Length: 96
Image (tube, rainbow, N blue to C red):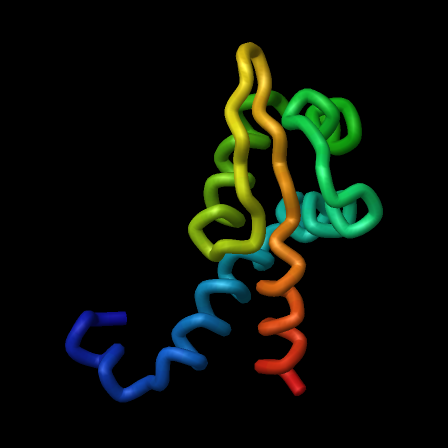
């Protein structure tokens, strides 16, 4: 969508769109599901759970970070991923 067309939408609708795009891939939806059951995990844990490479996991996590659904904390050889539950509440409210 062209930049000139985005001014016709509210920020709430733009936020919903950003979240929907972030959750639009099954791997990212699965990451959120994993994080809901264990709000903190490492990328190395996700590679074994999802059977995806570290680089693929990082690409998916980056999309979730852009939508502010997760936060990262970098450590040597891995990074910790934390769910942002407030953002999921916002999503639920937007949908309802």
